[in-house]
Image (cartoon, helix red, strand yellow):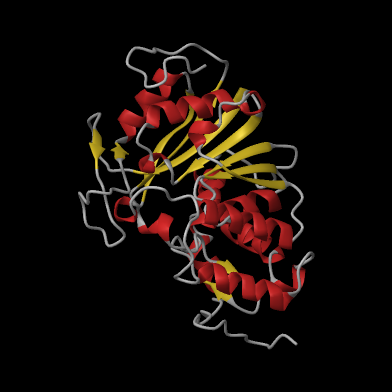
Length: 314
């Protein structure tokens, strides 16, 4: 029988903060935050469908174990980032009677609230929209998009994170969420072309070694009129600058294995998006060191291919 306040072995559940406190903090600038926070409450122990609570908790514990490692690492571990080698919960998830801390906290909720309230790029309801969620990590944004009514295809290149998001979707019987273990750079198949109303491209661009190619693949995945919701780590400067910045998890820069590859200024990112073929629906906004922009594929257009790493990209 499930205890009222279960403690996973080796994991101390963190207290679930009052929703009232979060409303006070967030409602002033992000009115949609509270609504989205409530949507996430459908993913609690009481809502499990395809797995028993005890089995679910055991699975979460095993995923969180420091010994959990990815199965797709083939290079020397010394040049792999700890995020790939060991399991780190992505976004904070309140499962009702216990809560898993996430490295990004409730950023998935604030992220979508920012696109709703600050940029005015999307509505609270995404019913009827088909969305590609790039770099879903442990599924926080994907579950929220699904709760907003969208048909979601989520991709994640690190296998143990993809498996986690897939497990959560199955456990809660989220039939409008499909999780794929794959890299964005592999999303060039016919079924990924001209397929999505929206692409959520959040917290990923600064991790990519070839951002321009990635942005073109996203462009191709949208249908005409589709919108890319882009959020990335950045820095504020008036000039067009693209900076290399490799950070480890402690914030030390220029580590040989890298983690963050390139940071854009807002003007650089705008120009790159336009080079690729996007029209800027909602100009770049820099909030807490992260840039938000909504870019639309009005129609499929050619792009300059000189020096492009994949010359035959559509």
